[in-house]
Length: 610
Image (cartoon, rainbow, N blue to C red; front, top):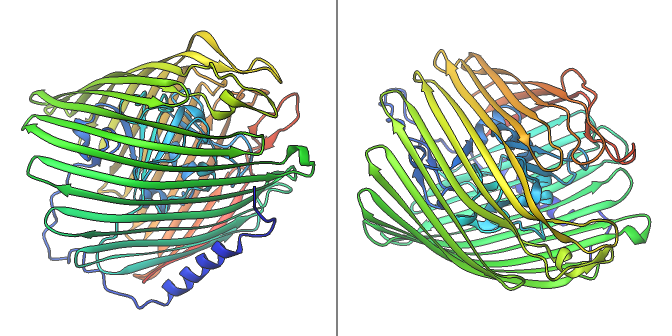
């Protein structure tokens, strides 16, 4: 590929220029916040978009989905998307390759990274050929307005690589009078991070703009990482019916992989979309997207130098029709074209297209039933159909919700598995891996401020693709691989939010890649005064191996806090790995390739609103 072995000066300069420009923009008063004497508005029920690609109240969602608040995460000092995803039950988000900046790994419901997909601004970014590892390495929370973790087999709405689930992410929509925020943070291991956001709404036009830069040497030799990134959304209402908008996101990053290779990643995502309220019962949405991800790994030995280029264009439409007060029809169509090349002589294009339809029916009061069916065509292996059925029953008197669902999905063979590479021949006769997954769960409100959820899930994966040994073609293994377990989540607050807590715990009975039987993430926040926040958090993984040598269980604790010095200046501080736990991100093979986790790190910074 065509990267130069020099820092990514262009985008880095753009990010610094953006920060400098926005930092000198005159401050505006935020009139969107109510005055002290104004009546507080009634709190609306949270909305979920990912389940059916259309906004709906959480009480009507028949799938398991965790909605994460980016602002809450930032208050806890969680700036990396990879760390944020552990707040969802059923999810282990980490890296088996290295510390910050290394390729990420996502394990949802006992599956591995290639079995789930990420959708950003309505555009699918990952598939079996281009998993989400590089995106997880570079994603942040400060330039996202919506983070939803949709768990379980979701092939009926999202197609292939949704056996574990789907990450639904959105660039923020600008709101209020023009206002901005700039954060500077520094700390251990030569770490520096700065980012600026600017947003607002003027008449019918809203806008959001962000830019950032970060670097760290990590806690270990030759793991230097730096990244520049920017995000933009502009949206305007054309008339009483139509709203149009565009998003643009770009990033450049560099990671020194323990001296084994220099890794460069460059991404670009652009979208243009339109949504229209055609009538009181019909809403129409259209989107065109382009995504490219360029990756190069330069090794001292040229034989191990490797690079990929993935470019994808897509068109999609989603139609929502209210057939009756208790019946909603959703339908859509899409076309995707992926162009993929790598330095192992693979250069192929994949087209796939299809249609889906879903019904949501309130059969009786408080009982919601849903069903979805999807057909799609892949030019590499033909047609594929997937389906899902779900239900949720809400008992208002007790604050109880009972939901269940069953559905199918699949993982398509990657280009390297089909066409081969310098590492071995491909197998053009491979079939997709298929899955049948189901879940049953209950959510219980405890008073006005606490909620607990418990869900059991099971996934049966057939025709798993496996490479038997070095130089041999991959084959489908007949039989079934199972993943199953229990998810538990609880969150709430006391004393009008003075104390708040969150816990996500996953127990796996069966999994792929020898995952930990128990995984948990918890946090406790205390606001002793309106201006101060103090918190403590912890993440625990029991014994596991990720398919290599065994890794002993470990628990990583952290503390964080902030103090509002003035109305526009906030001091931030955090300590990661508080007790300096000695742990491994990856155990290697026979002691080779071990990846160590970072030790105690101290970080402090300041946020300035303007």
